[in-house]
Image (cartoon, rainbow, N blue to C red; front, side, top):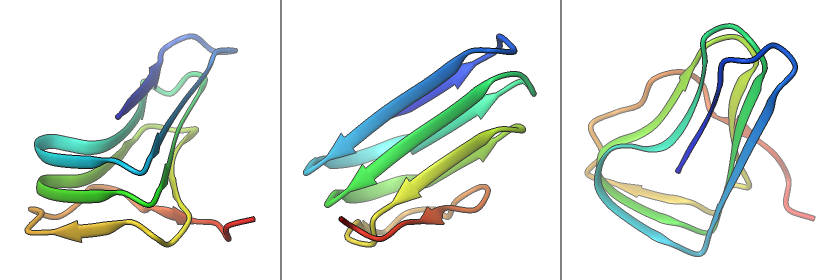
Amino acid sequence: MYATTSIASAVARATLTRSAVSHTSNALDAETNGAGTATVYAANNTIVGGRGWNVTGTGTSVVTYGDNHFSATSGAFGTMTSDAPQ
């Protein structure tokens, strides 16, 4: 799941829910080149192989609701943000 922007006032949002992701380079990926905001929201997913998440650039985040499962991933880049389910 990929959210990206390179425009100063742009907002990119992506949501991944109840899915299985297998052997991708970045399962959850939020990127900017320093402009705009990019956020990926993830809930109740299983992610196997590849890199778990990638958070690159100012104004980016990957938000988890604490119910994602990661197995045999090759690590992650950046910090994932936790939020409480409603």
